[in-house]
View 1 (cartoon, rainbow, N blue to C red):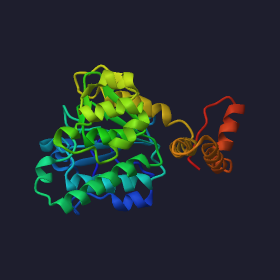
View 2: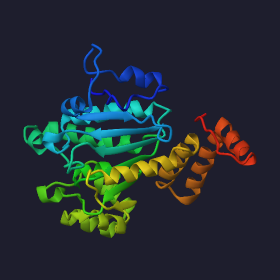
View 3: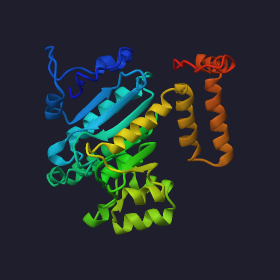
View 4: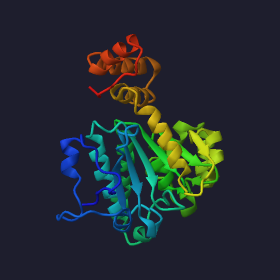
Length: 307
C-alpha cells in the first residue's frame, strides 16, 4: 500500500473509518519510519496536519524524484486512491497539493514510459489521467496547488484542476504538448479557457509557451506569486496560510459554496441561482448554522463541527 505517515505528522485521530481502512503501512508489521525513509520509498505521501490551528488540513506530496514527479501508471493509481480516501473523509477541510521534490512541481507525463505503450495503452492511460484530474476538481473540500517548481504539461493541468494556485514568482508553467505534436489531454484545453480569456488560453496552448509565476498571477491563473525562499517551499508556506484562513469557517458552508460555484459556472445564471438555492437548503438544518448564529449573538468565535 502506498500511504503511510511521517512520524511528526500522524493521521488525525478522528479520521473516518473509510480512510482508516484504506490507509495502512507498506509493511504489515508495525514499524516507525523517519521522514527520510518515507521520502526514499514513496511516490506519494498523504499527511494530516495535527497542530491546533492546522487540524483539518491534508497535504498530498508528490515524491517521484527520479522522474521529476512525472505521471507514471503507478503514480496515477496512487493519486486516484488517495483522492478517494480524501473524498470520504469529512474531517478534511482543505487539501494542499505540493511537491516533496526540490526544484519541480510536476513535469507532466512520463514520456519514457509512454514510449513503451501501444496506441491502445496510451488511450487508456490518458483516460485515467483525465479521470484523476476530474476527481481532484470534484473533491468536496477546497484544493490548493502549491507550486514551488516547474509545472509543465500534465503538471499544469493538475494544478488547473485545483480550486486555487499559489506559485513562486520565478517558477515556469506551461501547456507544452503541441511541441510534442499532441494536445493537452487531461483537461487543459477546457480548464484554461474557463480561467482565462479564451483568446489568451489559445495563444498559450498553440505556442506551447512557458510563462513565469509572476505572469501567471497577472493573467489570473495563480492567486498568489510569492518570492522564493531558501527552503524551496515558499508557495507551500503561503498555501498553508491560505488553508488556515479557510479551516475555521463552517466546513459544510465551504463545501456547499464550492459546489454552488463549480456547478453554477457550467450553466446559465437562472439555473446557477437554482443550484445556489439547493446548496443553501442543505445548510439550513445543520448544527453549524445554528452555532454560527449563537456565536454571533454571544460575540465569540464559532466552533464548527461539520454537521
